[in-house]
Image (tube, rainbow, N blue to C red; front, top):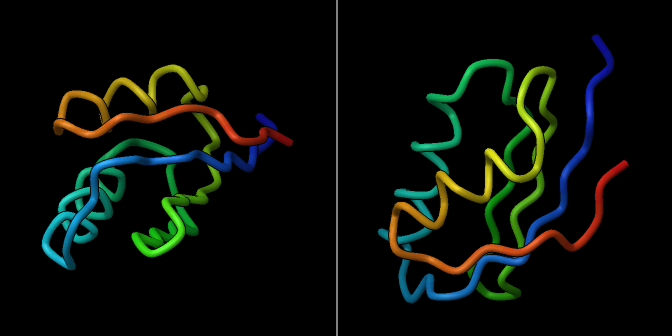
Length: 73
């Protein structure tokens, strides 16, 4: 299966704890790697071998943050 690089806009991260919460949740997902969470510019980038953007955004939304797709390649 091909890997997809997802770039998401994540709104609502106010501190390093929020950033860590998002990172840890994404790390626990199957086939997700290369996670970069940047609270300062509201960006999260990752590579997914299994999950699509919608599934990843649902996980982030369930944490209490707003997520939208910035780019998928």
